[in-house]
Length: 442
Image (cartoon, rainbow, N blue to C red):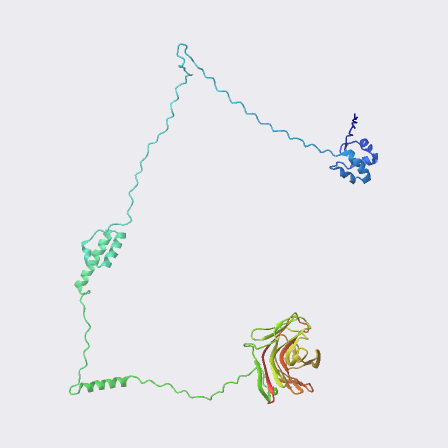
């Protein structure tokens, strides 16, 4: 037989209502810590004991099983009372008189007085209002036997006048008109007879003279009497002026002396072959019948070649610089064998020219920046550049004016082209047009 031992369960304390003595009696707590717990009331959860200063987690583990936080009971709202309905007013009692000797079905109710006579309303005799007859807007015209002699237009006018003026006035006016017409006929002022215009009789002829002779003499006399027209004065021719000779933008120079057949003439209408395209540093393209070289990054240089090559030649072209600054320049490329071997002749934004040779990938300045008054300086300026390459000599021209020359250069055959170099300007653009080249020698 097994004995069952019943252990009494200790009730847990409510943190919000327990006294300081009851809290201090819990294991791990003292009176000072109990006062701090009371100071942090109210608690909504047991874990909020960890916020009490001085209560360590070890003490919380001992106290937590012995405490609780009771949930406050929500106060119940009183039920609204329904208002009691007021009792209906009692109806007046009805007296019932039953005759004893009458049969069961015969029942008489309380008698009521005779109903009062209905009120007599005040009766107003209707008044009949006689409306006048509507007035006609027009009047009927009475026929008159005397109007047969009057034209239709006069009858219409008379009818309109009669409708507005009345028959008496109309009759008087009509009588007066007939009287006036009769008086005019009697006095001869008015007549209905038509008289033809008198015929023009021919002039009497002279006796003894034939009729044809008389007609001829009359025609001759008529022509002689007419005035004779005076001929206009003859304009005397003055000295003939020679037409003005058209002037071109540039005057011919000695660089074209002794040139041979033309190698090419590029006007870009339509454009010929050119090495166009776009990279990270430049963009070379055709725009508005011109070749445009756009240099995106300062310090970069870009050039383009066409498909023609020569060793001795005269090469020229129009160069137009866009918005530019000091150090930006553009111009012609010649004797270009590849990207590492070529010659550059360019004009800067401030009006200085430069001649550069690139050999083996290295740039050599044959003529560094040199000022010339022949150049048009500044942004959006247009200049004509030309170079004459003859054996080992290079002659340079700006706007058809000789500016300088270099001797002792290695002759070589190469391609023609254009270039632009951005010194400090981003997106520097140079446009080229009317590029032409002639060969030298036979």
